[in-house]
Length: 506
Image (cartoon, rainbow, N blue to C red; front, side):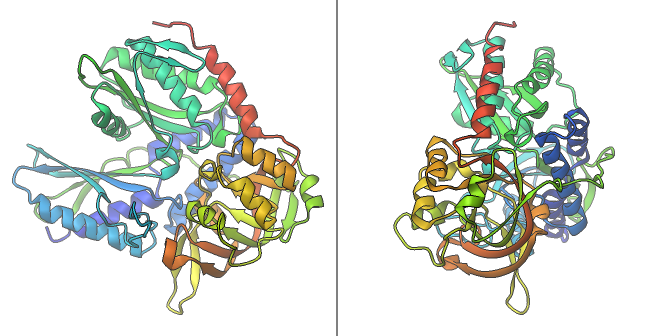
C-alpha cells in the first residue's frame, strides 16, 4: 500500500484541525439555546471562533491533542505489523509538523519522547473483518476530559442520588452523576460514551468506542434509545453550562452501549469527551492505501462567527507587573485583558517551584496553566501554534504556596481550583482567571512574541516554562481575592439540581 502512510497523515491532520459536521451542528444548537449575553454564550462564541480559525489556519483545535487512539478494521490477510509501523510514522510526522503536541512522556522519568511514540503510545486496536476495505478511525481525546472519565460498580450509594441498583434506574443515576462531576474541568459542554457491563478494562474501552458513533444515529436497543433521550434532556437541567460557567447546555451528546458481564460485577463506565470532539475516520483501498471516502463528513453545518464574537469591550486591562490594589478592585464575573509578560507553568513546573527558585522574577506576574504547541522556524526562533488552558485542579496541592512564595498576582487556566487556592488568593491578593478551554487558536493570536524558555530539556515542550509577550489576552475572573468562587457556586447549584433526580424513574 504505497499511499497508506500518506493517508494516515491526512487523517491525523484533519482530526486535529477540523471539527466534524455532526459536532459542529451540536455546538450550533447549543448556541441557539443558550441565554444571550451570558457567560456561557460568550464562551460558545469563543469556541465557534476557535473552530473556524483552526480550520482556516490548519492548526490544532486544542493545544492538548490528546492520546491518538486508532480503531483499525482490516481484511483477512492484511499485514498489521507493517500497518502499525506506518501509523506510527504518520504520528511522528504529524508531530513534527505541529499538528500534534509532543504528548508521550516516560511515566518513570518524566522524559518527553518528542515524537508521540513510546510504549503504549499511540494506542492502536486492530480488528479483522470480512470486508474488502480498510476502515481506520481516530479519536484525539485530551487529558482534561480523559481525567473526568469515571466508572461505577453497582450497587452503590451516589452523592445526591442515593442508592443506585443493578437496573436501568441505577444506570441512569450513574450517567447523571458523571455529567455533574465533570463540571468545567472536562471543557463542558461535553459528549459521553457509556458502557454497561464488561469488566474494569473492557468497560472503559467499550465506553470510548461509543464515541465513534454518529451523533444523529439511533440506538437499536429500545431501552437504551429511551435512556439516551432522557439523559440528553435532563442532564442539561443540571446547570453546569459551557466551561462550568453555569447555563442551559451541559451535554451535547450521549451514546450508550451494553455488553455481558460476570454475575458478581456490574460496571457502568463513562468516557467523557470535551466540546472539542475530535474524531474522524476513513475507508482505505487495501491495494493502493489511498483514501476512498471519509466517514464523519456527512451533512453540513451553518456554524458561523458573529461579528461581535469574542469578549465585551467592557473589560479591565491588566499589565504585568500587577499591583495588589488592581487585583482587589476585581470581582468574580469581571472580564480582563492581559497584556505584557506571561509565564506558562503546568504540573512539572509547580512541583519544581515548591523546592527551587524561579528562573525569572514572578513578582506581580501571571502564571498560565498551559502546555502550548510550539514550532521553531528556520532561524531557530520559537512560535506559538496553539495555546489554550489546561485543567487547573491538578495544581491545587501547590498553588497557594507558589502564589505566596513568588508574589504572583494572577493564575489562569480552566475549570477552577479548590478551597486551598481560594484561601491563598484572598490572603495574598491574587486572582484566578478562567480562559476558554480548547480555544487554542483563539488564544495563540494574542501571543506577540516568545521571550524565552526554561526547563525545555528537562520537562519537554508542554511542561517547560515559556515566557510570552501577549496583547489583549482575554479571560474571566472566576475566583477573586475576596473569597468568592464561581466554580464553587456552580457546583453547589448543580448538586442541588442533581438531588432532584434521586427518585426512581424506571
